[in-house]
Image (cartoon, rainbow, N blue to C red; front, top):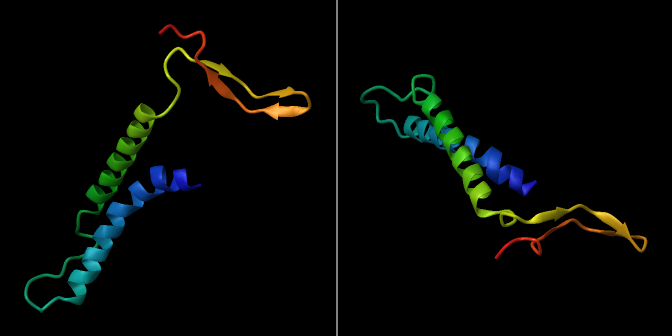
Length: 96
């Protein structure tokens, strides 16, 4: 569940949340001079786009920094002696 939060939800929600908090703060501390920032007129599209870019960067980093070494053989889970042996990667057949 935490992986889903950090890889998908947080990168999409964080830029929009920061922008909405900035608009709220600017409206609260407005001194009466000039226009108030409006949520509808602001860079909401760019905040969402930044979220997608952050999500793609996080997924690319995860893909490049984890996993089994190339040439490893995957051994699926199986029963041995009445117990389930978990899956693993076997690098015995891999050239060194």
